[in-house]
Length: 295
Image (cartoon, rainbow, N blue to C red; front, side, top):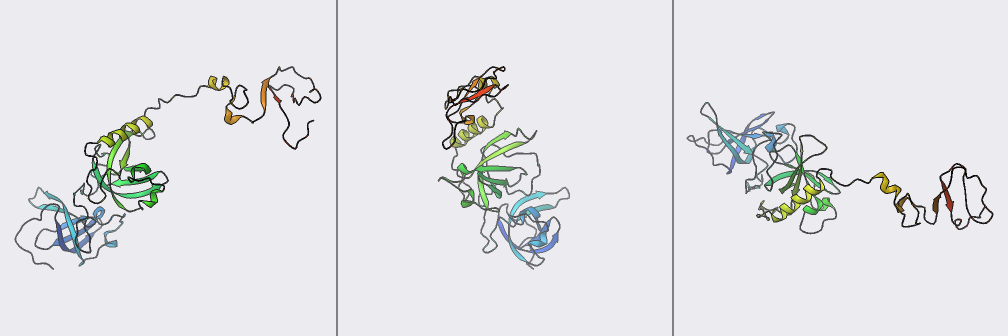
């Protein structure tokens, strides 16, 4: 093990080297080189994928690189040190989160949502034809990166850009009430407004982000869209046949429908191509289909 020296604390957001000294259900304790106080890697900071048990990732005695993401004094005069394994390359100790965006452990408040126009790092948890869902660090709710917000170029398939488990940078461009879930919100995210290399905000003035927010508010708003009234269908004139009471999509091309009186019980005249049904409200006039004989 590494030689312990006089009490001192590592710098916040610094990368340290250490050895795993104990494993619990909630994470792993690491003794860092040059420090007496051990740090805790919470189970949520072990990997970008979901981890059920800490020993799936680490073993006692294993040497690791860790990043100091939390330093918190306790009432008894000691200090709690929070570490992250997933923010550091285990090959060379390179910091994978140099801008230190939301490296806190877990989600202390599951009902809290990220602030509008803030940049966060997260994991891709699901991919759909219309985009990808991302779980942001420190929050329970998932946000949607629409396919139009995945890259500066046109994306035909979200799977061409990201895969489930990928670590990505996102900017919150909208946070609207979810009409299907009372008290919940829908998050809209953008990847193309953030550098995927270091998390730099590429839209610092929020010009594009505000435009996207307005679009989300308009499209997802308050159900103020105009409804089609029943009378509108009754009074519509079909552009295909010129008849009334039905839409072009409901029209059988080449046939016309006219109202006839209920008592109509006359037989069709020979050769006129009319078909009448007793008690019916409609009559069909027009020529027979090709290949069919008139009756």
